[in-house]
Figure: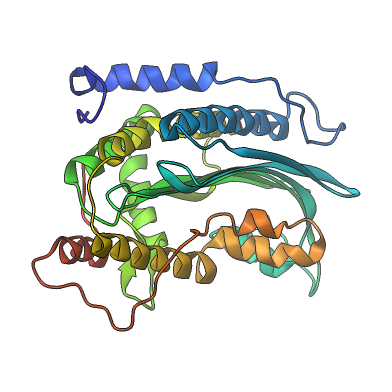
Amino acid sequence: AVALAGAGRGRETKGRRSQKLLARAVMDQVEFVSMCKDSDPSDSARRKFEKICADAQERICRVIEELDGKAKFNREKYDRGEKPGGGIACVLTGGDVFEKAGVNLSVVYGEMPQEALAAANERGADRIGLKLEPGQKVPFFACGLSSVMHPKNPHCPTMHFNYRYFETEFGVWWFGGGTDITPAYLDEEDMKHFHGTYKIVCDTFDSAWYPKFKDNADKYFYIPHRGETRGLGGIFFDDFNTESAERHMDFSSMCLAAVTEAYVPIIRKHKDDAFTQQQKDWQQMRRGRYVEFNLVYDRGTIFGLKMLSSGVGRLESILMSLPENARWQYNHQPVMGTEEEKIMQCFKKARDWV
């Protein structure tokens, strides 16, 4: 554990932190009106995962509002017209700490075009185990909680998470998701804390998961046309159904409980750091990389955009992850020996943090 904020954090054992995260996952429960179909049983994976996401959304928004101290999330519940499902979009702007933060819960019933299925998971359209006829669509259910938080201070990193459950009417299901961090400036203790928190979560279930999911994140959040990563990784998994649905839900729940544990101490540490205009410009250039990855390579964005024509996509929610401000500066190269060049080396070559 890394002592970033709060007395005693550095003295906490790995087991104690794991117990706290498990307890938080159980305690984070709020009153909630389901957006699932009435025909979905109360003990179905659909309703259980939706409730996990709703509870996490409420807690994370509450913690971020307290951290910001000024702005509040605008909570917008929406439906899909005559189609079942819906969502709750929570967006905060103009805060003292956060330029923009969004936490979006989505419940979707629909029919996926094969190109959308290919974008939705690692294995593509053959994931369902059936040979599809040309033009045949796949009836599906999906539920997920996604978030991106863009702080004002260049020394405060952006954070993203997404946890989701997919189920097709052909009886195939899988989980996906992860949490990752995108700093503009390198603080190695911050990275040890962030990655260490998620290593504890993974190790609680299987010691092989953290190195595997960390490697997945390093590969997934890569920008091929730049030859660099979007940020400094975290964990990422997709097409995941090797365990029981209950165990997968427990893992996703604990990952969601760890979001504020991993991220908030870092923001508290840096939110009042002094910075220059040059450092703000660099932050916005890195936000430009964020935009490039999300619009060109991100599976969730591509899937959402491909679903718009079916009437179940929602453009504002799909593009919620984009920052309010970004910058593209012609042929910019960090000066050797600077802090910008130091972190650029980390974007060029992944490294281990714990």
